[in-house]
Length: 80
Image 1 (tube, rainbow, N blue to C red):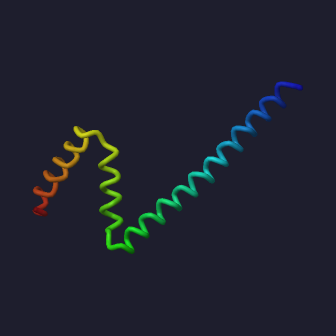
Image 2 (cartoon, rainbow, N blue to C red; image 1 turned 180 degrees about the vertical axis):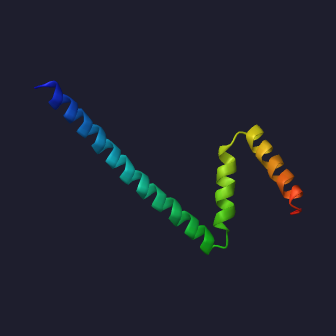
Image 3 (cartoon, rainbow, N blue to C red; image 1 turned 45 degrees about the horizontal axis):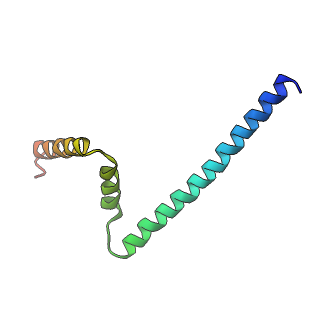
């Protein structure tokens, strides 16, 4: 086999793996969307839930800093 065939085979395998992962990611995104819709049907606010999920991903110091900055901006705009 020539190096071109080996490289082409390897590239094809990478592309196929990426395609499978993209499909899996799409299914997971659909599942997450369904959970938000279910929560909404139970009276929860999906936008607020998304904010909580995003905040929980942050470390405590980063979360505290983001919340303090938000409060500063809100105060500057008279939103308090």
